[in-house]
Structures are given as structure tokens and as C-alpha cells.
Image (cartoon, rainbow, N blue to C red):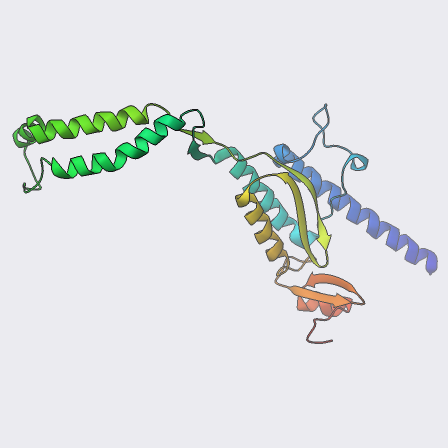
Length: 230
């Protein structure tokens, strides 16, 4: 009986290790930029990095988290001030309110009908106010062409480790930005509402100092209880 129990335990552990490895390979194949690799491009062996452990019920959460991080780092960029154009940016900032005032004073369409024919539009364009408007537009376009702002992509992200800890997901990275941190916090929050065994709705429960997030059915089968039941 004891031998059978040990055998079953061994088979269970081996099955869990294989599942973790297969899931890890799935992530590495679909999001290779997020993981550390050797010179041959293959995922680094376990002895060279932290062990990754993702319960079956959370695999979808981790998969979507990696997908959203990968998409963010590849396809997102934001405009930031060009550090080499400080003087020009200062002049643009000073010019902007001046242009607004000038355009208000010299508005060729002021007190005019909203709908104009081509002849009327051309006449307004050739008027003094129209020429002033054209001049202010050219000045603003001049600043725009000076590349006062540049586009910057988010910092690269490398996954250091993901695992279960105290009944919820922990996802550790190097790099990233506030958006990536928000994605991770949301995924970890979702793990506390998702059964780690089945992926169904669940809650954090405990048994003898061990914590897990389980559905009511699984918690009852495994002997876990919530704080209210203790």
C-alpha cells in the first residue's frame, strides 16, 4: 500500500512537472522576446533561472498577461520632448498663445456665413486677415517640422519568474513601465478570484497554514475552508 502511494505521488509530481514544462514551452514559443534565452536561442535550462510554476486554472491568465505585455512592448509608443530641441520647444511654447490671439483678431470667417462657395473662399483667403492666418500657420508648421518631440517605445520586459504564493499568482519581471505593472497587478488580482485547479470562479481559502484559491466544490473536496468558516 505504501509503495503504491509513493508511486502515485511520484507519478503526480512527474505529471505536474511535465505540465509546467509544456506550458512554459508554449509561452516561450509564442512570446520569445519576454524570456531569457541562451546563445542557441533556446530557453535557458532551469538551473540557470528561477523555477516557473503555474497552476492549471491560471494558465489562461498568465498566457493572456504575456500576450498583452508582448503587444504593449512591440506596438506602443509615446511622444516625449526631444532632449536636443529644448530652445526650440521653449520658442514654440511662447509662440502658441500668441498665435491663438492673432488668429482671434484676424479671423477672415468672422461674421461670415458658414457655407461659402469657392469664389467667396478664395476672396477670404486673399484678404489681409486670410494672409495673416496663412502666415501664423506657416510659423506653426515650421516648429512642427523641427521634430520637437520624438517617439519612444516602452522598455523591454523579461520574465524572471511566475508562480503561486500564498494562494495567488506572483509574476516577477525586469524592465517594463507603469502600464506593464498595471497589467501584472490585474492578473494577480484575477488569480485571487479564479480557481487554480479548474479555472472556475473561486476564492482564497486555507488548510493548516496552506493557502489556495479554489472553487467551493474543489475547496470542499480538498478540505480547505474560508476565513468565515474557520
